[in-house]
Image (cartoon, rainbow, N blue to C red; front, side, top):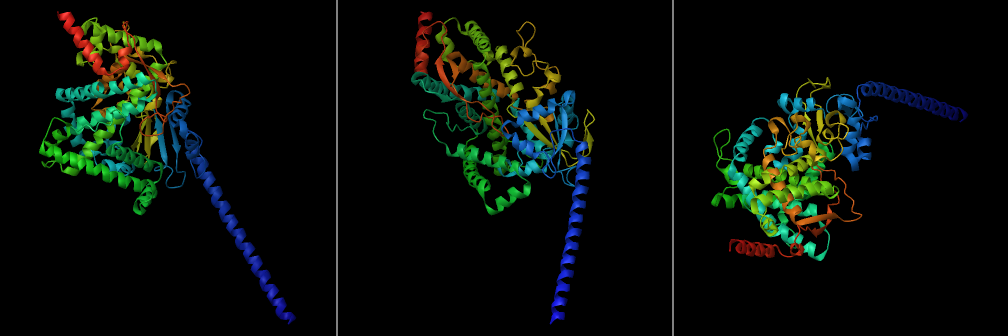
Length: 557
């Protein structure tokens, strides 16, 4: 019996010793693997010059910690590089991935921007990750395609955007929205003294305008009472859900889509509403073509000589809606916020407007306010153009963009970018670099865009110092239309009203593809006096029209 017990004890002892040996070997393997990884990681980080990169997590902890000020954080990192204005970081510090899929080059150097956007344009497409994320919403529309698909749509759109009829259509839709709805809503708020979210009003106005311009149908989201619109709500929800895809690896959102979970389920339901609305709009336009963009594309042919299908037309229209709504409204929101904080700039702008109107409409202030300013009048507002340009320099509607690297390349500053990696160019940071704009780069100075005499607008001598409208072959086709719309709205508001920021209202950036204000722009609306009684501006705009008509009749008599 004693022998059996001894044998069992010996077996247990051998088992313990074996377990200890295996544990020791496992520990040695882990230690060797960790040591090897850390040595590899150390060699990797020696080549990086951006924010701190952590083992396994890369630069993501810094990004998450600064998510509320991401664009300023990127700008700080770029300024830390000095005149180089370029850094490289890693978001996937894992062997076989870190030097390609995990490597991100961030730059705002004008020569690098020119290289990516123009000189080596074909080597830097949007890439498969971005296209996959946006495919359900935008398909292979002009803003989510590369190569021949993009080129055909670009050439077709370029022909239409250069026509005077499209500019006239934009002016018609904008002036109608201003006179019939925006002025009425501002007059109501002026009269009752209640605050209004100006960013919301501008989003509604520009959405109505781009819908009218795109498929000739005004949803009238900017109306008294600010009504709910199912298409607008679905479009916003679909856009928001699509943006969330960019926050996660591709396999994660694809799994959520397959299981119909969370944001992917919201995206699916929203797209059902959007698709139904767009199908109806296309069907109506096929029955009764007009001068809108959709009707114009219906007359065009693809590379094979065939008419665009309804599904292709739908994605083309949605691409224009997405680009045309947010960019102008966001820029105007930052413009009004900046002007409210700079009364000296506001005075110059209003003085310029009244000087032009005195010359074109005479000294009667009622005539100034009867109608929004026309083409020729707006073209003379050089100070307003400079103020809008300066706003976009500091607060570009699209603060950054990312390109995929097709083949190994070297940027003009010597930075090596391997195939499969990405290049992010920070438009927001371009305007905040002393090496580009001087010591006063973060100051709002519209005069930097004016001639020495102050009577002529002068664009940047280097076009890649200002890329708010992109650059190279993808330069924004709607740039002139955007300025026309922004100048129309800005002059229509500033001539009639003074805006005051609601005390305590916090203006901060929302992390999105466009530079929204997270909490909106809450303002009080006050009448602007031009020497006469301004109380009528807090009444219905019809009263101003009646007054101007009476004045015109009296002058004629």
